[in-house]
Image 1 (cartoon, rainbow, N blue to C red):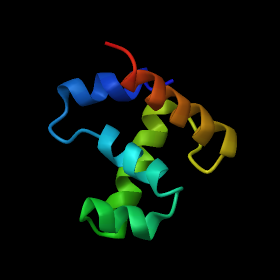
Image 2 (cartoon, rainbow, N blue to C red):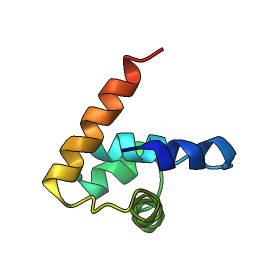
Image 3 (cartoon, rainbow, N blue to C red):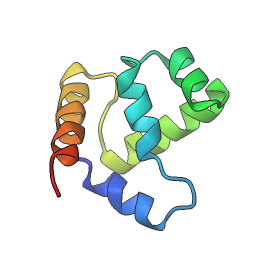
Length: 79
């Protein structure tokens, strides 16, 4: 589910996984997420658009949010 994002982050100067994690931690509330990441909202929107393209998902879809949350939790428990 998050493989393309992890691959991107290995080669990227700016990893996007922390943005996704913050977005999910703040239940999709963009203003709060932007504040937590210390970026302006447009920067957050740009990052979320890149994440959406990389994953081929809709971050506003509840099932997608659940699947991504579960994938991130599972990743934390793997060696």
